Every structure is written in C-alpha cells, then in structure tokens.
Image (tube, rainbow, N blue to C red; front, side, top):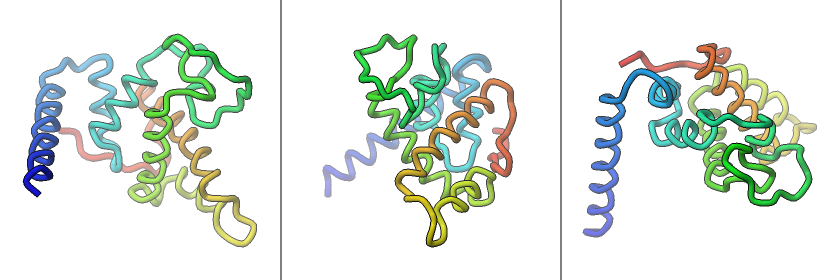
Length: 163
C-alpha cells in the first residue's frame, strides 16, 4: 500500500507539473492544440498531449493511414514519422484512440458521433461494438483534427469553459 501511495503521489506531481508547464507555454502551435483538446469533456491533458504530439501536429502524407483500422492492407515497413503510422502503426496511439472513443461515448452521449455509433450497434441487426468502435475512433480523430485546425466544434460536443 505504501508503494501504491508513492506511485499515486508521483503521478499527481507529474500531472501538476505538466499542467503548470502548459499554462506557461505560448498560445500558439502544439500547446494551443493541447489546450483546445483538453477543453473537450472526456479528454484529459495526457490524451490531448498524446494526440497532438503523435498525430495532429505532424504533416501526414495520407490522413487515412493515421487512423486505426485503415483500409491500407499492404504490410507496412517501418515508416518515417512524416509518413505517419500505417496498418501496423503506433500501438500506443491506436490503443489511446480506442480508449478515447469508449470514453467519448460515456461523456458525450448527445453528440452526433455518439448517436451515429448507437444507431449502428443497437438492435438485432446492429454491428459488433468492437468493430464499430474503431470506426468511431477514426471519425473522432478526424473531428478533433478539424477542431484544432479550423476551430469547428463537432456537432453536439460539449466543451469545458476556457480557463
């Protein structure tokens, strides 16, 4: 229990330091993207930072290949960061996007994306939830990319007040 308390204390310290550093950072570039994403209810600073660093601040050759479960079926060699993750992709990003999609369903129940997911997975002819969550993660990533690049808030998505 003492070790668990120590780990929790370390996590709290890291999160506090990250939030303080983000507050002192300039209001442009990746820092502004992280702040904007962290305003979406259901997305924390850790997830926002991962999305910005790993996907949203990069120049991707093909945006479809930046998402989990892309249709590009050829086996990928190790790609340069400029090309983005392929089918094999970055496991941490893929995992984070899937977790984010589940969290998004929990916190943004009235959004258009959540309604889109529910209509396709409910009822006797509904698709498998685990298959559709990948599709939702891809749609969510595209919506978040639009949010940080154009400021277009996805339909029905609730934001925290600006700090």
